[in-house]
Image (cartoon, rainbow, N blue to C red; front, top):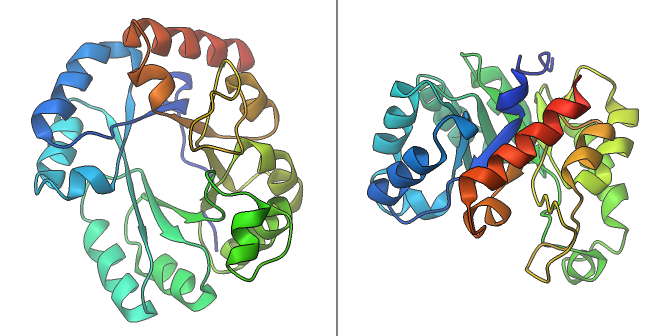
Length: 239
């Protein structure tokens, strides 16, 4: 059975994507952003450095929440082993792929902590032509909602999905299911590899629990100021 959404302070609803090559760069960003960011996503690029769990520990030592975004996908027994071990670490969110009901059920059963598991539905860099190349000739929203419902039935706690699909996911799954939205573009589309994007306030208005932001903060002239501006926008939503 899916668990209730992670209790989050308003400032924890902004998750910064710490897409960097190593620990030194990761901690430089944490210092640069200071109290503007309380929640960090660490993914595959950092994993390849060999310093992944050093960064995880460093974030936890600074009282930051951690989102492990490694999109696990394997046979159920292997995924159960991975999630069982990962649940020993101070992790708030973790992603697994939402394509395999038995695998998702095994992951949910192996989770022995307060970590919330999020199923990856359809990557925000993909559109209908990309799905068609994979043999799925349907609109992304239909595939996303179908996978969200399958994840919920399997006991997964929520999904990570485009903000464009937050409203239909919320309508289909109800209030007790977590929705975390990447691909946030405060000023609108910017021509990068993210196709299905929305702004900050829209994501929350449509039912998101938290948003993941990378390049709009990282590439800003003043990253801390950009993060604080988003925090103010989120605070306005939750007044």
